[in-house]
Length: 343
Image 1: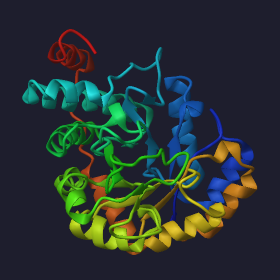
Image 2: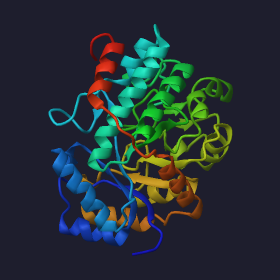
Image 3: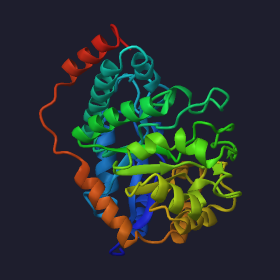
Image 4: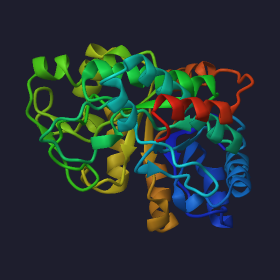
């Protein structure tokens, strides 16, 4: 096993690791893993899978990610886990009572963190800081933390504080902003024509105000004002000048999923392009749909974590608070009270 992990976060195929997966993860040594509904049947099973994944790479601190936003994006589902409200619920409350919305968003994230940490999951790919525009594709919609830049920043920070207090690192996404995309990047490549001034005054604002967060995920979106052809994920210009520059984010930068249709070319070529553009980590989720040989080629194309990326990961780990006593039942009661009797 190499001393430095691969700059790679991988999915796995099912509820337990196969022998081939275990051997592959041992040899490839990805930095971490991401779980989906296909991997989550019960609390006991998820805990065992998280342990198995970390044992495969021989690192107790290997991050395990999940998308648990609430609403329509939840990998952990009832009856074993609660049905968390969509972020739009808090945004709706913020239009009338912003302080209550902020408290509710913070508490909701703290409850989510409590659920995740107890399973061995240390990173949640939330909150969504994209500011949705009325004529945009609905892929963001009610997933967004807020309907204005200021609301997204305020409620997004509250959620991040809740996650961190519960020992879970948040991932702000989709930097530098997916809210005005006219297409779903899962299916095709969105192109945004807005100028630098408009983007800077709206889309970039929440990310700039939360640039101190430990993780961020890129948008598979072309911003013509900065790069005529390449989406942010594979654009050195957008990553250097916008994400690291204008926005000022210096945390751990992970790509959105390599398998999404917005990206073009063979999967190994996509992995190389992501890393060469300046992303710290390559995310590849669709491992259950491809033979292990395809995943191996993605791993071969991905280099090790750079020194700067490893330092960002260490900072991200340090940002996760040591957990203190927390009563999730009382917290849920308070969230329900703030939301007016239930979400």
